Structure formats: C-alpha cells, structure tokens
Length: 172
Image (cartoon, rainbow, N blue to C red):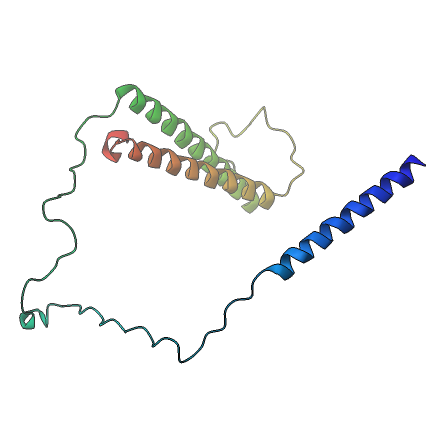
C-alpha cells in the first residue's frame, strides 16, 4: 500500500510541475511585431579610412598610430635565474637525455637483430636479457613511443624554464 501511495504522489507532482511549466511558457509575451513605417533605418556610419604607405602623402591632418608612443615595452629582465633551479633542470635534462641515448642503443640492437647482424653491445652477451614474445617491430614501436614521450617531457621542461626566465644558453 505505501508503495502505490508514493507512486501516486510522484505522479501528481510530476503532473503539477509540467502544468506549471506550460502555463509559464504560454504566458510569456510574444515579441512585438515590427512595423515598417514606424522608424526610419539607422544612419549608416562612414567607414574609417585605412592609410597605407602608398596613399599616406594624400592624408591631410594628423595621422593616428596604433599604440602609445610614451609606453615602451619593458626590456627582458636581466636578473639571473636561481642557481639551484638551474641545477635541478639541468639534472632532469641530463637524465632524460641519457634515457633517450639508451633507447637509441636498444633500437639499433633490435634493428641489427632483425637484419641478422651481430649486437652492438660491448661483450655481445647480455646476462639479464630474457626471451621476448613480442615481435621486433612491436618492441621497436614501444621504444619509439617512449622516446617521443621523453622528448615531449624535455620540451615541456624547457618551456617551463623559459617562462621562469632561464635562457637556453644557460641549460646546455
């Protein structure tokens, strides 16, 4: 019994809200109709003349220039960047560039293996290597994806450093 009573209450509330919404929509005033003879069309503004180097000699009077000649752009801050921040960024860059170099070596090894050539590692034997079930192409694509990810991280780190006032000559 209580379930049917609650269902009836919900149904009644839903009907009441929908009826109220319809009455609000129907009571909204309609947009006024425009009459053609009531107001004349607005006056059209004369377009501004743009002067170029070719027709500047024909200009009479003062010529407006965009910008304020009194306000000059601020020179770049000559304040040196924080040495600790520079060291931190340089350390991160060195780490990521080392990882990219390792990935490049792995890519060369995989390419040589695919072509049947000997490994480029110093001893030729890698004791920590195990059998990989993934094809060489899949392994190479994964390594190339890691390399692209590292390169984008390096770019983001350099952008952040540039925003903080570090010049690229200070980092490499």
